[in-house]
Length: 127
Image (cartoon, rainbow, N blue to C red; front, side):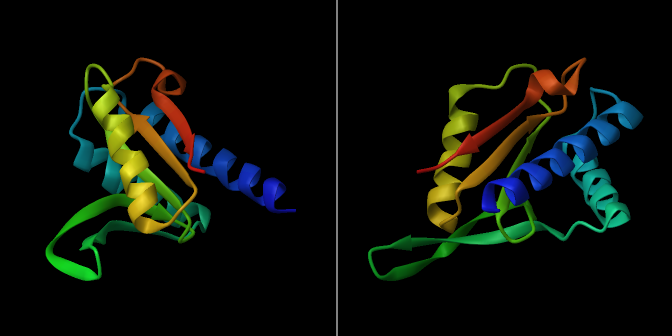
């Protein structure tokens, strides 16, 4: 049941991302794709939050610094959006770190600066 639900949500995330990319095309700012993807999720009835605070914890201390998750879908799935010419290993390391810090299992690295979005869509499973 869990795998089935995960597959459905993964499909919805991919489909919504493709719709945004199809409508806007490549070459815009990451923030543009983020706000449009949030609207697409809203139109589809998918719960999502943007720029979710991810505090830095060191030992038992929460420090006065945080990261921001671009989009958190259904309180479970982290989306890291990019609009870059080339996705670098550091981008993948970034989402893996976010997954660890947020104690989540599944993330998506989505680069909207591709001719075909499927070439810029990567699912990452932690643990």
